Length: 189
Image (cartoon, rainbow, N blue to C red; front, side, top):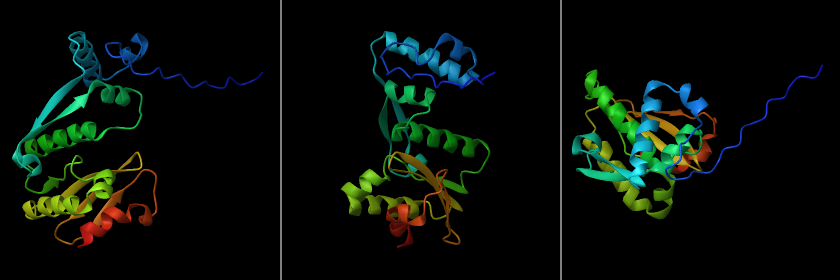
C-alpha cells in the first residue's frame, strides 16, 4: 500500500472583493483573523482598495502621521507570503499598545519599519541613519529598542539593549552576521 503524498494547495492570486480563503478554511480561523476577513469583505464592497492607519508622535517619536495598507497586503497574511512594511507596522503599533496596557512602555521602544529597512538604507543611507539616530536619541531612556527590519524579502527582529549596547538578532533563517552588516554598522556608530 502506497502512502498518500500530500499535495500543496494552489494559491489563487489576489482578486479584489473576493474572499482571501475558502469557506472551509475560514471555519478554522481564530476569532481575530475571522473578524478581519469579514471586515475586508464588507469594506471591499465599497470599492475601497486600501485603508488608513494613523500613528501618534509617542509611538515612533517622528510626529503624527498615517500610512495606507492595501487589501492585497492583508491577503498575504492569510497565505503566509511576504509581508509588506505596512503590515509589520500595524503589528508594531499593536505591540506598542500592549506595552502601554501592561506598563512596559517606559522600558520598551520601537523603531518604525517604514523608516528603517534595506530599501531605504540602499536608496538614502544618510537620511535613514539620521532617522535611526533620532529615534534612538528620543528613546534613550528606555531599556530596549525593538527594530523590525526587512532585507531581501525576509523580516528579522533586532533588539538593542540601550544600557549595554548589545544587539540581539532574532532571525528564523539564521543568516550569517555578514548578511545584516548593513544594518549593524549604523547602529554601532
